[in-house]
Image (tube, rainbow, N blue to C red):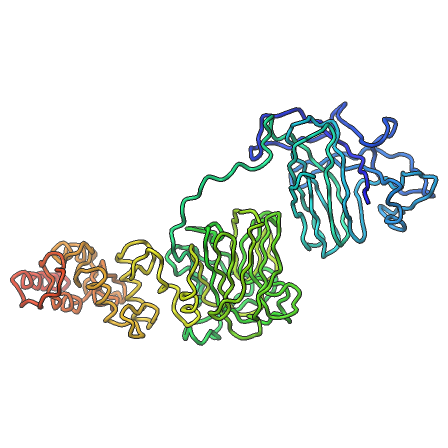
Length: 600
């Protein structure tokens, strides 16, 4: 069934402004620009502002003034119901007045400033008149709704559909659509399912002269993503990004660190999320973020929670808009709390949402969840094994500006997870199944091979540099087997030798990493001034700490000279026997003695 809406229409002159430009919405009611469709000229457009008396046409109706919502001016929609839909209005109230139907009204059932429906709407339309044929227009509606569990869609009659609401109660919102006027009158459709809401006002604007620009221009081909680990949060007492990309996390609300961790990780802490509002970790966008901006990407994390008690429709990872409900991409618990499956949801106008894994990951035990995405085809892995594939190519590409762990973050947060999360890592490429299995088995994200990357490039900078050897030294001191380069199951001094001699192909003592160990390295380290100083653990490779103990001491010179590389030029292609101390080495030892005397 259809209901005709009597509407106040602003006839806007053709404009040279195209979609996406900075245009101000038309506001106010101007003389000779008020039109009513589908009724004779003698019928004025007016709003219901008082109580009805005896179901008769009330007196004293006046035109509602435009109203403002968040800086946008809307013109009230004023309309009447025709005879075709009387039963739906029977017994309903609005502004203390009753919607009713009598034969005497003959098609004038109710006169209201906002349309209130109980039980939903289906296939209604609004007729805009006075349009220019061939002109592109944008129309935007303001909705207010009062019950949960509804979906409201806007359809411009030309196949463009925007989902405005999807279950969020008690707030206002917007529907916006574009259309090309093919007649002086244009029908604009609104379709809503379950729930109660009312449509309060609209704005109309011309968006382009002929030929009209009624769709966004195609984006230029993006630069190909550089495969990289772009975020790694191990939650070992903080939410800092350990990938080297500085996409650090900010903790909010009831996030604490617990010693309950997955067995394959073996040490450290995990993050506990208490499920209350405003409990989440928000991720900074500093480098290569958001992850959904890449044509291919991977999200990996460990989770422990119950999907049926505290976690109906709660989210473990989300990206979206900080100001709107569109777009949205997230992973979480089953939206009805029916079981412990993983729930995937993506929306940008079109929706692919609340589709589920086969196996359960939320049964209050630790499980490893990985999402591998290639061109909007997502593959879900649970505990290292392929589980399901999800096609969301129907959802238009989008630009997210906010990333969160443990909730959905928009203008406010929601869907807060209760449970533990650990070792979250994201990548700008699709991990192969072998790497998914390796992460499940306990391999550190820092050790995952990057396509086209360099072994030993721990910060994914594209080069073996001092930052990498410093990271390796820290890992050796901390016992982090993820930095194991010789595959003996641990990070130790031999891994440092492999990095220096077999990967970087230089010598211990090459502080500036120019491929040689010579007097220029002495100049650098003594300029730093940390030789046998009183501050423990303050030295790096570039400052003379060649044995990885955190300090620059005589032990570093012993290691460097024993490798036989001083003043030997670039490292030869084949290993050479260690030479006897040369006059150059004796000179270096003399410099060392001089430096020691200067300290005293």
